[in-house]
Image (cartoon, rainbow, N blue to C red):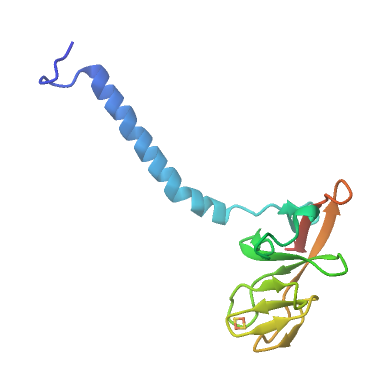
Length: 159
Ligand code: FES
């Protein structure tokens, strides 16, 4: 048995070694995980489409108490904007403005998609209608799945 002033015992050395090995393993995992995630193929369907379920269902796609619509979510490394039009259509777009890559937002009250970096405006089909954006937004395919009124929103695009 060791005392607090004597040399560390074998069991204490072993314990410290395991702590050190664990720390090294955690550090390596933290360094290499993002690299592996970047290099690993993204989830894709058998048809080769990238397909992701939105983090909200159809019944949750509405403005909150402050009037803010759900934020874009990560879709294959890019923000995806899902909107519910006044006609109750669910549409999805690449939320990166085609001007200088700001993130666009849905303005239901104005019936458009807006980029507040330079006041770029797109219609609800993603077409650039005013301001500096030179091209339409990329439109994604939307598929609804599940119980009526509470469907899961599946967004996909060809890869
Ligand atoms: S970045 Fe969107 S209008 Fe300029």
